[in-house]
Length: 337
Ligand SMILES: NC(=O)c1ccc[n+]([C@@H]2O[C@H](COP(=O)([O-])OP(=O)(O)OC[C@H]3O[C@@H](n4cnc5c(N)ncnc54)[C@H](O)[C@@H]3O)[C@@H](O)[C@H]2O)c1
Image (spheres, rainbow, N blue to C red):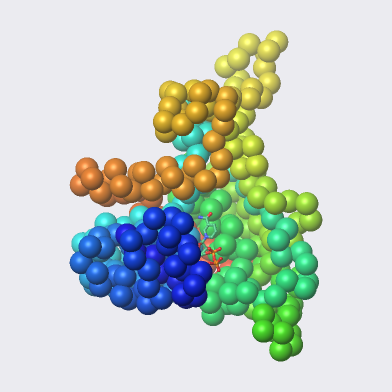
């Protein structure tokens, strides 16, 4: 196992703590090693394409952080690279790996909500609120691609596709509230070239409607990802700040006791939970990554393609790109396939 980073001292400390056999400040060297079969791409967004393409050329499997790329063309190039090389590929859309999200998908697929009519997603954070926070790669378009849109809306777009299906068209609005920030080296101020907040309306291919909003400047909101799906026979809602609970409302319940029920999704019947704690003890953010990696390794071991794949990464990127363009052009736009 090889770790790569830029700061030699911090990297070797990291490698020691987490049991890596080797460490290198040159990621190319890591990919070239014969004992490396899988590359986990978790650097800033502008590095994803170069590393994925190098991994594909070397015949190594690729596991990539979200967003897949800075824009749709770059994402499509990455998909082409892994498909042409015939290497396994997986997106780290870790929110799919909460047991409550799996249950939500099953309820929707089993028809417990009836025809799905509306999807609502809010993803609010406040880490960008302090104007004194230095300009990082996340605030520069050439490094990040976009701001809150690619960083956080990408998760709710992926969950919308996972739960409700493909999005057909969007109309969007992007806003940059804090337009400049201190440069990290203290030499002055630098321009913020991405959005702090993004919102868009969507229509799914099924005819369902979607409302999406994300921001990094919502005071008091830390990782407030709130999803609600309404169907003809019921609704579900979930919040990432209370990840073990799925709320479910069903018209099939007798009217006298009808109401949103809180399902604590920790029984061993739910995916992965039986491998952790007794019921009710709860799983957290980190478990979603462990489950994603478990899926990756299980798929590789069984010789099947892991999911979600770079195809899902490209599909999410197409929605983000259409939302950004729709905002710029002030009109509804179809999603490119
Ligand atoms: N799935 C999620 O929920 C989730 C959460 C956070 C971040 N992310 C994604 O993970 C990626 C990284 O985000 P982050 O918050 O960890 O960023 P970060 O800036 O905190 O960390 C980036 C790391 O990349 C290393 N790096 C930069 N250039 C490098 C190079 N040339 N060679 C080797 N290492 C290099 C840095 O040293 C640093 O350790 C982004 O794509 C981000 O969108 C995903």
